[in-house]
Image (cartoon, rainbow, N blue to C red; front, side, top):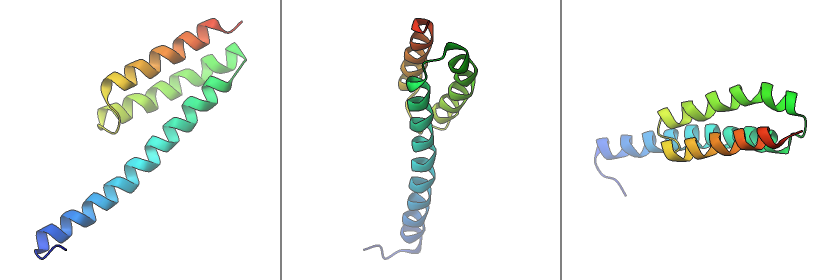
Length: 84
């Protein structure tokens, strides 16, 4: 258990960050999932920029890795291009 005040504060800060990051990562996963399940090309094309902005924001804040963000965006773009 932490004895120093700074260590206790670090634990509180880490917990708050964990909750914050978990929320945004889960929101992004849900957005990606809904886009992947979309079968209409026009709807997917309108959803895509919003999802990409969300993914970029997560990568910028280091919630997800920048290469993972690139891979997600590429796979989503490929999915949209395959829709009829």
